[in-house]
Length: 435
Ligand SMILES: Nc1ncnc2c1ncn2[C@@H]1O[C@H](COP(=O)(O)OP(=O)(O)OP(=O)(O)O)[C@@H](O)[C@H]1O
Image (tube, rainbow, N blue to C red):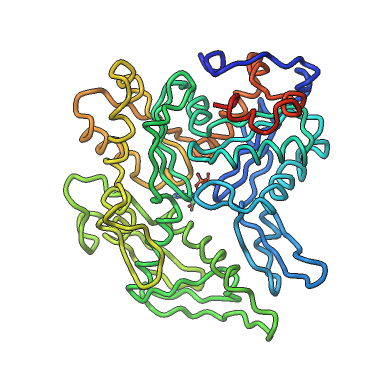
């Protein structure tokens, strides 16, 4: 791998300043849906927690926060659910550092001051946010050294590709990023809000438009098997007055069911020809059972809820359910075209030949076949070769894994921003050093 030696370098901090080779660096990959943390050099993050958190307003004592899978899913009267991330970057600087600290210290170490820290960031992170991240790392966490790495570059490294076209399908966005020798070609970086959250809302729209009731696991005390399409026969949990879950917690629980639907029922139409309008003829049907036992066979619908990724004008729109503007949102083919259009003609074939598909949203059935077809349509001449790990864990953790690889390479120590440098130059040093 030709990676970090080609990343911008500076005067290397001494081993004493960044902690030396004996101390493992920590790697934090904060996403819209999941926050991943672990030790550099390892294959998987030790901690993966929801980026959503719970809070209860505690009067004079202020808010009480709850982080981590068990706590956010626990039914606590009055607990609201929120997310410090918006559009894939930090929006709430009061909570994000607490969430990160929880991810880093709950299972990894209690001594943040002993470990260099690499944090990943999307290409569209703002300069203000980048400086704030450095400030949190050095001033709140007291780390000896710090680096901000682009998640697309990390995902490329995870596949052993410092030159690549990285297609990341996350919760908030689909982003397409050309990288060359470990450097992001910023002009070609494009994204649309057509990621996993969009698909969740497409499913909600389909259910709402067709009167399909969406139940969540917490509601169901017991259930009886029922025939396809017949009303559920379930005993629902009753809540005493004042002990009901909040609307935000209920929506969070519904989101789990929507993710199950994405995992087992939703599918991407590979073509040829347009998505079938209805029925199961020639395409088969898949049964989805809701937590209350209600179950239905989904045919053409399961393709129509994902088609908006490729043809935004075909997105499902229903009532108040949020959706991007179908007229101005770029579909997948337009995105990859824009991403590659201005790339140097000599680099273009290398980039296309090393197309990396990553992010948990890319685990939708049939997505890779469709991406292959779309890429072949947009770039009929040059050879396009897709790399998408067959291992779903690797696909979900690619940015973290690339960060883990980078931070554990011997040559990486030149890139750490040391605490001494931060103290001398202030947070603005990240703009200069972490390109
Ligand atoms: N098997 C699956 N099939 C389809 N979608 C899935 C699957 N598993 C998870 N998802 C969806 O993937 C999204 C999360 O993707 P990912 O873990 O890459 O997000 P993230 O990195 O936290 O988000 P972002 O990249 O927006 O910051 C969610 O919308 C989730 O519902």
